[in-house]
Length: 452
Ligand code: NDP
Image (cartoon, rainbow, N blue to C red; front, side):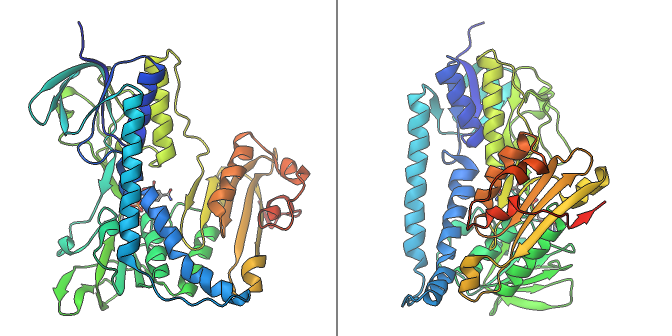
């Protein structure tokens, strides 16, 4: 049977775009791709990219204050949110255009529309046109989840945060994960009075306990009011903005409430249920190691499969799919030892096992140092950096590395290479320090801080 396409990709985000490009440009496949919103997906349009630019924007007041301690005469005349927001919007448009150009140059046909899957080889565009494909790739990502509380419609999510007409004076951030903690710091850096409610005992659950504690303390020291063990009961509109009765008995008023309570896969309404594609408990599409669903012609990559919800992972999954199906190179996406960074102030970079998880598995040696880094110590600030190596006592392998401090995201990327290669603590020790840096502490920790 002759198909219209060899591959039809649903979703123009990180995973879908990579799969489409490799299948077409390197696999020689005829590829169509549908995107109902803006090309680039969550990462480019309403996630990593605008977030990181906001992290940069929010860092300047602290940098200006620090510059004064270094002898500069600096005056902070305030932040012009509309000016920054318009530049941000222009940058995203530029990136979106670049994505389109790359795909088109690779020979991919773009359909700017929503599609549904009507059978294992057919998709239907919003206008009713049907197209057939030998393979279909679902790369529809995820969306913010807001719990069903009274007044939930008064809250914004990370989807809306980049388009605010004005910055609030008082913001409540709900949640304790990546997005909540990053935006608590961003908004605080931009001059907003920030309160953060988290239902559990400590923010950033899943990360190394000592690292989370240090980040939380530093956020509080900078002036973010973190309330753990606290959740929202309802949101009410009032003359004092949005009033929020909470489980700790308080009732505070805010100008903005940002919900960052997780994300859910965009898996429903695509017609997949009727075809026999399997779904997991959070609605994720169930796939095997090669990203194949229970329907052999339908594959899925990225956040819609809820494996590790990070852009570079989606890209790897999309690439591995294209290699497997269109280049004759069977490739599993490798989900082991994936490093990540939380762009809080201070940053947290992490790869491998936390101290707590490693201890469950067997005897470990923990090497940890906390210190005041040269740059901020000179300026008289109390900020502390943490470097931690979690080492297997039996074979000296480094099982995990956790860094809290400026540029921790940059440092963890490099540490991750060594750890992925199976480096032992002795390999770290054999490496001569780069001086004076913060990262040199990673190769100069001689004695374990804790064993067992
Ligand atoms: P996370 O899963 O990281 O965090 C969700 C938070 O919301 C948790 O603190 C969770 O609490 C809390 N929560 C969940 N449900 C409720 C509820 N019903 N009521 C109150 N609180 C609730 O999700 P995010 O939205 O922050 O981010 C989504 C994903 O995006 C991340 O997992 C990450 O993979 C990715 N991401 C990565 C970034 C990076 O690499 N820097 C940046 C941003 C996002 P509890 O801990 O108790 O479950």
